[in-house]
Length: 299
Ligand code: AMP
View 1 (cartoon, rainbow, N blue to C red):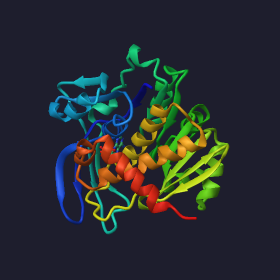
View 2 (cartoon, protein in one colour; view 1 turned 30 degrees about the horizontal axis):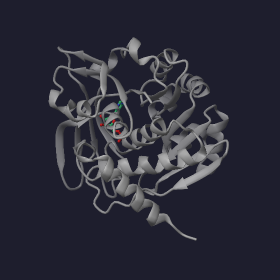
View 3 (cartoon, rainbow, N blue to C red; view 1 turned 60 degrees about the horizontal axis):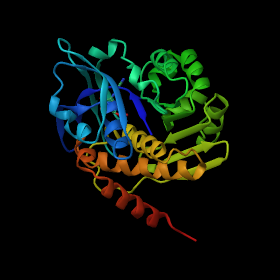
View 4 (tube, protein in one colour; view 1 turned 90 degrees about the vertical axis):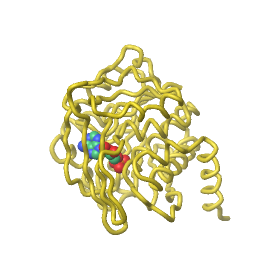
């Protein structure tokens, strides 16, 4: 089933305790699409500058991604993000954000408007709302961040009333609801509108809240975390890709999709940039999924 994603294409500078890289391929839409395209057809929409390497699209092209919504600004630089991780690398400290081409409105191609599934990656809620208007029939999920919770709360609350699902991390869930306990935060978020809430807890997994019940899943265990950048977007891509492939929003389908999400994130964090997801195949993902199920089995 067709899945459209709106988000960022970026060049990232990343510092970890072990190593640093500069100007590597990143961005929410890139990580999301690389994960989702392992499951279903992806329609990518994002702004990109003239400096973004064309070769970076090879894997997505081979996986059948639709690039009609990729809007290229030849004379402008791509979005740039610099971040640093310390210690257990649980959270990125943003050192610098240059929006560059992200200031421009995203393009919504006519051909995307019949997408059955839609993911609005982290961006200004007003832009998310505008995009959503072009997809009246889509099942829409969105992500957000602390910047918008703090400064664009009213618009974000309007968005929450219109979307089907919200994927956010634990800090954001606490900030948005004022609830420290995540079970209470999940319930409070459901009150704000979305049917489905997914609270990500980094290496500790994720919680799912639906009208039919709750579910908690540990993360796929990774021994060697190299770079956590993109883990959240890879999780969302695996989740939405698996849901779109199954075309089923039952509790069982959501549980399976969460497992695919954490497996996609595990592949991302084992290497810098998108190398992990680019090298991954559906077989690798399925093997890890089966391994995770064995890991969690008890009676
Ligand atoms: P994640 O680690 O899953 O939250 O995603 C990290 C990716 O999001 C990086 O590759 C960045 O290029 C991108 N990113 C970071 N901050 C922003 C932002 N404010 N808007 C859009 N994309 C961002």
